Image: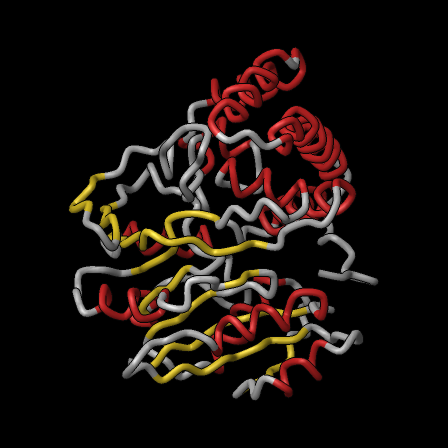
Length: 335
């Protein structure tokens, strides 16, 4: 089985060495693993790190966004399995590819991903919070469309899914149209054939692409009972910056008709509940307290601030979009 690891980069030297070291450490007998990097013009040593790890292909990404990088790298890849790994992802389970390859022998399985974020007590406060919550956007907690095990809810999604089997190695689920969790990135592996007839160029918007796949009946996912470490943010300022980027890019590409994930099917009351819970503070404080009771980590108390930052950035981004949209400026971007 040939696996193409798809990694978009832009000044990713802070995390890329650990990312590539973990990919090269994967123990997958019988697997042919290639790494394809799409670089958006890094100036910080990213390409030197790629060369040191013997990356098989480095292609340019003139459109600069991570989604454009994924599309460019997939176009250059030769594997039948695509592993979408961001430069801040660490595959800390050396057997992940082996477990995924075994699951892909079942032709009915379209995609495989780790069930959870790895919780590292020594990591930064924001990273610990995201790992414990099971998502890096607190809005998803209220919408229910998250796709990693949450230590708060005890579930990997708030959407209704059909559990096909729950074994020692993985839980296999069928996803229904209209209730699609945000699958598609951070260690997500998908058959290249599953992309046939889908809209994924020149921007591979992962959650949109998977929703399209589900609509065509390519809807069975295996969640390996293992984790993946996500070096998402070093600081609160980084979290704010990434939330601003998320909403600005989303609104820009939505206006251009490129985004297709159907947020409209999520009941409006869930959006209202997020706003009300954040503004009144008490509900999000109670959520943080329930999380702290389950795992005694002070990172839970970032939850109210994370919700406020998200509400501000999403609200301000929406107001800005009334006067026109543009992608978040990547000038000076560092991973």
